[in-house]
Every structure is written in structure tokens, then in C-alpha cells.
Figure 1 (spheres, rainbow, N blue to C red):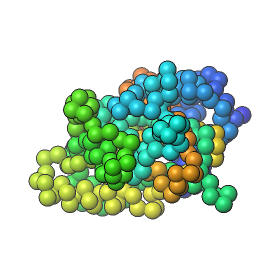
Figure 2: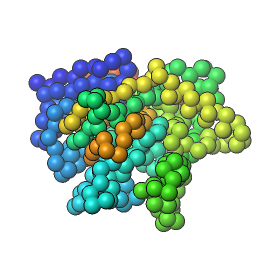
Figure 3: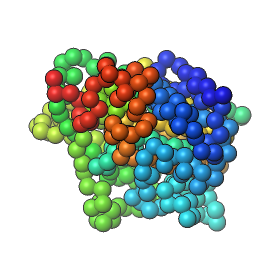
Figure 4: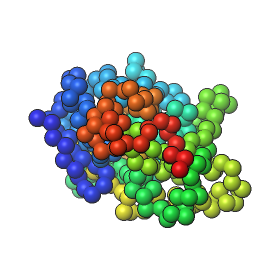
Length: 322
Ligand code: SIN
């Protein structure tokens, strides 16, 4: 029987009673979506999935992204990317430094990401203690905790997100040994900077979420540069405060899903080159979740969901104009 047990006060719940290698019944899928709406991050422990099965489960939530770098894809399965510090024949088998600072996946994309589906096979350990946690921060709680004056300053605003900001920062941090090649002009053209509302109405929960992140957000549109820099510095400090965080301590065969509309994340690089970590990642884009006709959004039992008559509109994705 499917159970969803919250792991703390805010983000995070443990889901048992489902084998994700099998197809999900409509009732189980609706329960998983309700769990995502409530908890933002769900861990399904003890899963056994090959790359095609991981992709099939991930595809339930949206079209899968093929990473712009074109690197470290599972052979024959380009929508599954390998994140790892392991090597074979002296060559990296995966992207070794993925996500190692606060960011929101795909905020630089015109269609933003809904769900990450990360499956871990090897967890680094030192003296028996697991390393390589992934930290999450809750942008619904962060929005609620903003001073009213800042909420008013953000109302109706958009911000620009740029893929190159995080990529170039990680290249500079790693120095000459970076496995991240300089972005080509063609790659930069594929992912030009894009603007999104700074405050969105979450399509599943109806809650307002702060949609900006240190990794990719480069300016608040329409403000003088100095004012934009000052406001972003405030938001980056505010949104990563400890009270909004949940730390996921990985165990082999955990499959973790997280909602990129509601969360930021940061992969903690506290392990060395000989402490191996290996995971596979799929990213389901938000090309279905904003659609009120999408089956998963009809569950009126989710407070604020589209089927809930008290819910506010989930379209457009910006906050209500009032
Ligand atoms: C990511 O998908 O951004 C990285 C997550 C992780 O390695 O923990």
C-alpha cells in the first residue's frame, strides 16, 4: 500500500509501497502528484530502475529535457544524464560537479522545469557516514516570509535567467581541470537569456513561490542595475536561509523527485575523488503541469489545486495582478 510520510516541517516526504519500474495506476499517480504539491521533494527508497524505466516514469510529468551540453548521456538514452565523479580509462563517466551551488534547474529555459527525477546508485562514504547530500530550499515558505514591502516591490516584475552564469561560474571554480568545455556560440544561441515572473502561482498548490535563484538569475527586469543588484543580493540571502531548507541524505537506490517550481537545490561537494558518487538524472519540463486540463491537476483533495473551487487561477504563471 502506498504511504507518504513527511520527513520534517517543510519540504520532504518518504514514499513507500510503489515499484516505479512498473506502470502507475491513475490513483497512485494522483497520490504522487498530491505528495509533490504538499511536500515538494519525495524520496522513493529501494527502487531498481534501468535508464529506460527511469525515463518512462519521469515522462509521466512532462517532456524530458536533453541537456544542452550534449555530454554524459546514457548511451542510446539522451534524456538520461549521468552525474558522477567516477572515471573509466581515465575519462569522467559523468558530469562531476553538477549542481554544486544554489540554483533551480532549467530556470534559464523558456519552458521551465517541473520535476527532477534523480536516481542514485553509488553514495560516497567516509568512516561509514554518507556524504554528498543534496540541500533544498522552499520558495513557497521563502515568499511567505518576505517583508510586505519586498513582496510589493516584486509584484508584476520579471527577472532574467542566463544558463551561462552557472556554467561559467563552475568552469572558473574548477580552473584548468574543468570538464565543462567553454560554451560554444551555438550552445549560447540555443539557450539565450530568458525572463520569467519573479513570483509565480504554483500550478499544483496555488501558493505563491519566489522564482529567482543565485545560479541563473542575473537581473530584475526594468530596474536600474544597482537597484536590481541590491534586490537580488537580498533575495539570494533570504531564500537560502536555514529555516527554509531540507537536506537529503542519500542511500543507494533512492529515487528522489523534486519540484523545481517550488525549490532551489545545492549538491554538497564534501567528498573526494576516491569517494565515489554516481546518479542518473531526468528532467521533466513544465509543459504539462500548467495546463488545467492535465489529469493530475483535477484532484480537488489537494488544497489549492486546480480542481479545488477555492483555488486561484494557475494560468498565467505570474502572480495575480492584484
Ligand atoms: C542536480 O541535479 O542538480 C544535482 C543533484 C545532485 O547531484 O545531488
